[in-house]
Image (cartoon, rainbow, N blue to C red; front, side, top):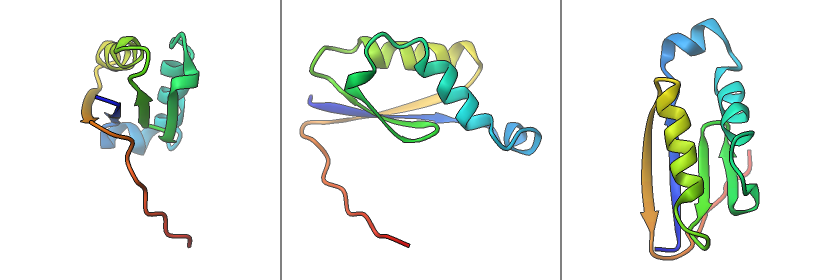
Length: 88
């Protein structure tokens, strides 16, 4: 495996109470990750993690999400993903 896409699901009720819930959650989680250089933040609750140094960063992200009562989904890739980006 080359990398993993980790998605933290922020419940809708949190969005209604706090428009910055995802950003706040992501910042709190990333503050606890030892090596940020292998993590690309796609959006406030979506992270692309390199597996070059193992699963430690993913384990930290998923564990901290679980502690906060948030569901996470992880998709593993055998190679770096190719992105098609469309500008507004």
